[in-house]
Image (cartoon, rainbow, N blue to C red; front, side, top):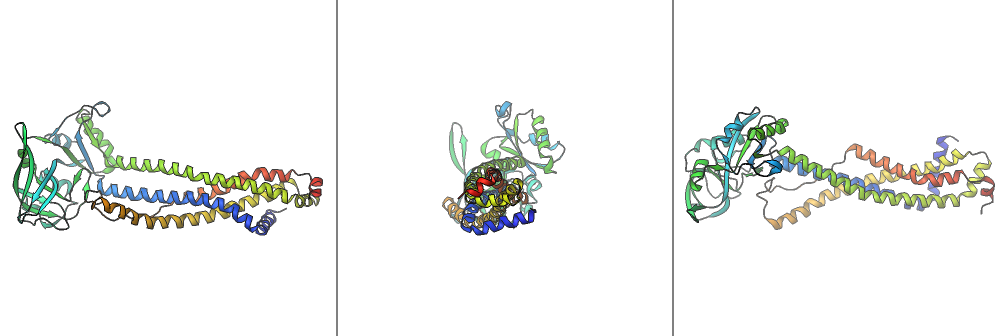
Length: 419
């Protein structure tokens, strides 16, 4: 019998048993739907998180902090501004920025207050490293430079404007005790919204000259050094050179490595969730096995007649396997469509739930995205669709082999006598 006729007969038998076909296909639909929706949502989450990290962790900025040694222990306890010269000499490094920061409260001329971060930087180096990212809503770089000048980060309602005076309250050590002192600054500029770069928050921060910061706290040490590199693809190699220059006494944070780690975690989670979802396909396969065995019993006499008129074993085998293939194709197509619809539906619902949940924890000003809205667009790779469809057909065929072989091996005489 030609394959065309076998498929036609298989399709006719499925139509004759619509309810049974629908229930058998349902198991496959649920399994493929789970696999497709989980894969699409996982891809969407990974893309969203990677985008957020890429915005907050500039891939062309490395962060050098004290530490290092064997297995991360020991190393330098602090960094000095002179250390930036050692890094500046490394090929591929464009600019460096030494920073120190602490918490503070600032007051404006009318008594308004704001809890924020006090960050000591060299304004020239700040422009060299982040000039491409930072823009002023008020003031400019030319108004900076004096020891009492400062930059205020982005705020929806700025606490001061360029030319205004602000006072910072800082906790400093005096002998063996700590006291709060007030230090006044002239605002040289107010930044547009810039989010955060690694451990450096631009919004809700006040930047002052590093020399002034060190005088306030009576120290020459700095917290970290930010390194702008020419080619992010060379980040790992440059990071290794920096570590070698300090004899592995510092830790160099590479943003791309963090992003790769996060992607790796998502991949592991996706495999784990897909493994759980595949259980539904296993259940569907067992259902196919049971239904096929029942079908063989119901069609025993029909099989006997087919053999009596000359049908060979492989024809009977092909007929039952073709029904399994049609079930796999039908279940796979419907499962993929339903899975995509479910994924996009969840993609619309989750951001709403996420924004409601986030609302209970402040406005997100210190987040990587600067408190921007959360969006989720499911991403499903074409190969995932092919794998899902192939797996649907494969499961159907595997669990149909035994019933199909049993049908093909029936004795035609006994089959004709079967009631």
